[in-house]
Length: 116
Length: 115
Image 1 (cartoon, chains in turn green, yellow):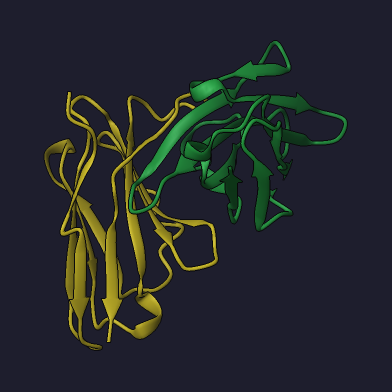
Image 2 (cartoon, each protein chain N blue to C red):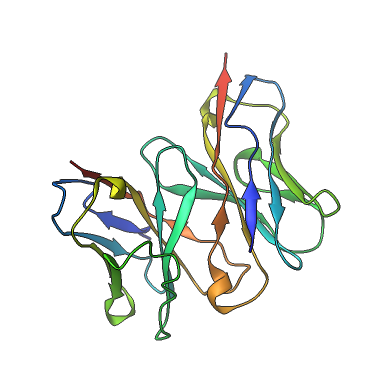
């Protein structure tokens, strides 16, 4: 069975500082990995995904994530945080097969708080 | 174009009542998913529809939960004899296909409160 772990319930960072939101996964075979962001009272918005190729993936709003196969990690990063980045971030994994495996398995989420 | 829409945005019901939650996916999206988001937990997969194929119901927590998708578009999630533990935000998502590389687009959710 596939699973995702987000070890930090909350990450606090000052505006202008770099941020990292951690994610590790477990899946059979090569994973498809996703990051979503949820702003208050909103649905989830897609940020970026890793399918294959370059381990560093760039996404929306200046976010990027690095796929590390040996450490089974897919940490979300941003060089300079903004207060408006404050939200709930979810990492998700999907096994690379069709049918029932098309569902995403999500982590429990990490709340990012960016302060002035 | 319009995104995924869900209705109602909020639903308060009494224990034992039935509720119906509606999802309108993005036009042309063949795959539709329901998830449940409980306080302090991640998103829990409930059910998945792809075209005319039989739905994947493996995530439904009990036989009180059911869902249908009419005409390959609108979907309704029904919870019968609601319990307090059913209180959560129910999220619907759709995607162009069911392939593993395709991202899902989420609606704003329906917040269900069972008193």
